[in-house]
Length: 75
Image 1 (cartoon, rainbow, N blue to C red):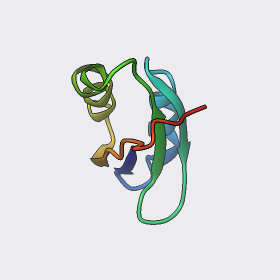
Image 2: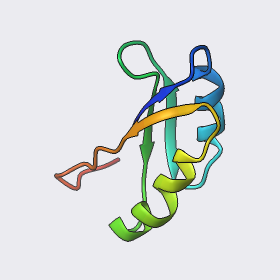
Image 3: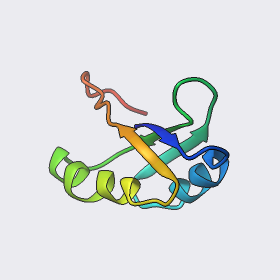
Image 4: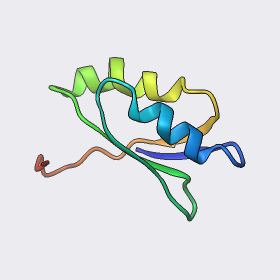
């Protein structure tokens, strides 16, 4: 997931996201997005119904873009 945050909140948001179930990594970055999060779920339904909404509810997030990995390969 690519995430935009309120100004100056990227590091705090990334730390909070790293604590959530389903979040594998959360890093604050520079560029058009402020945080990059890798999430994982057993299936697409769990991703849509549980993990993505829990990420979107974190205070300080202004916009998210979910980019599912199409080839199914993951570490």
